[in-house]
Length: 197
Image (tube, rainbow, N blue to C red; front, side):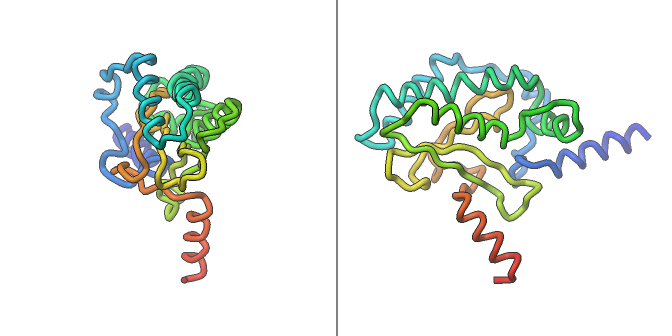
């Protein structure tokens, strides 16, 4: 009976949103617990450099402010949402009412609001969706570009993926885990599938 309950719980984890579509989606909980967090100041400087590399029009002060928000704010949200487990385990807790927040959508919404509050002029905020063809595996996050650039040229800011609010960042085109789409492109894809087009 216990084995069946554990198996059922693991099966439910596989069905939760924000999981990704490959074998790397569910980190080993023991490996997850052993991971060391990168010092926030070091990570902030790294992200600021990556944002500056988006184009010559990006203001250095803006890049630093956006980087600080992207690195430090999610750590606070994760604490407030009592996110102490690997992402999939935390999702399971949210879905089953054991935690109130902490799925990818919560992080994306909070990140979007925090970056908007910075009044960015040279950086542009985009919402991005992956796995839009499967609602149970859908993942959402925020992408920053230099103002006027398409989302495909931007930097993914994903504080859900590594767990506990630790930021993963990288270029949209170089993300080998998720194929990001704009919400409009994802909606068009869903509409084509539902009409058989």
